[in-house]
Length: 206
Image 1 (cartoon, helix red, strand yellow):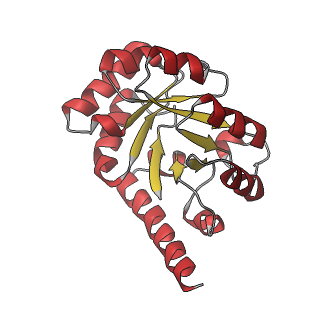
Image 2: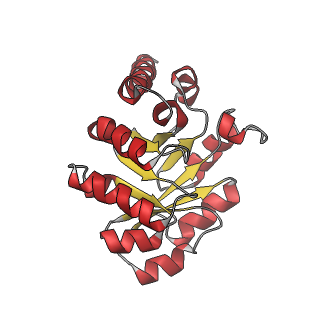
C-alpha cells in the first residue's frame, strides 16, 4: 500500500523543507498542498527538495499547474473545485492526475474523466475538518469496489485508526498532520508503518 504524506498548510517554508527531507526516502509520494502560500514560496519548496535529492517522481503538487510546468514535474493533484481533468489531460497528456472525491458519484465520474487515482476523505474525525462529520469506511469500501483506479484514503489516519482499513482494497493512505505537525516526523511515520504492517499480518492469517 502506498504511503502519501501531505503538507498541512501551517508549516513555514523552512519547516516543510526540513521535515520532508527527513522522511522522503520512507514514503511513496509527497504532496505539496499549500493553499495560502504564494507561487514563489511553493517554487522555493520544490526547488529545495529537488536540490537535496528528493525524487522528482515523488513530488505531487496540489492545484498549482503553473508550478508543475515550471518545475517539469509529472504529478498533479486536483481538488474537486479545480481544473477539469479533461482540460489538464489535453494540455499535458503525460501528466499523472489525482482527484479529490467525496461521493461515489464523484469517484465514478472522475475515473471516466481520466483521473489516474482518487483521494477520498475525510475518513475519520480530524482537527482540520472539526466541523464536518467524517465520511466513514463504508463509503470508502463502496468507492473501492466501484472503480478500477487506485483510491487513497485521507483524514484522521493515525496508528490507532489504521486497523479500521483492514481488508479494503486501497491503493494507499495519506497522512497529513500526524506526520507534518510532529517534532519527529520520521518516528511518526514509523508508527504508521508498524500499524500497517500489523494489519497486513492479520489479513494474511484470516
